[in-house]
Image (cartoon, rainbow, N blue to C red; front, side):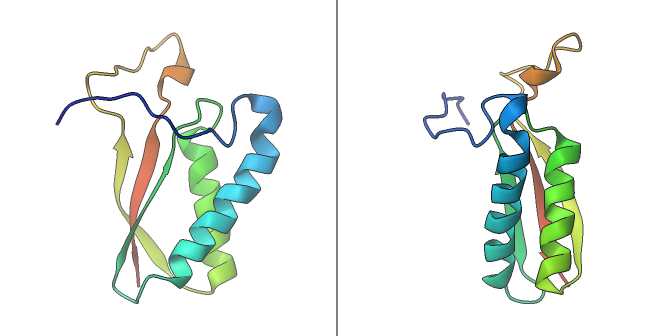
Length: 103
C-alpha cells in the first residue's frame, strides 16, 4: 500500500484549537457508535498533530459513555512506516486511530 498526502482539513491545526476539536471528535465518534450494531467494529482516526493518542482515546471514552454502550479497543493504529515518527518531534505522529468493537 502506497503513502499519499491527506487532503482533508484538520480539526485541530494547532493546540489552541484542541478543546473545540475534541468536542467535534467526540460528536463524530458518538454518531459512528450509534450507527454500529452490537458486535460491530468502528474505526476512528485523527490526522491532527495537535491531537495525541491520549486525547483521541479520551474523546472515545466520552462518546462511549454518552452512547450508553460498552466498547473495547481491538487495535491501536498509526500512520504507515513510510511516515516515521520522530522521537524528538511528537507532532510527527500525526495519524493515530483506534479500531473498537461495540459490545
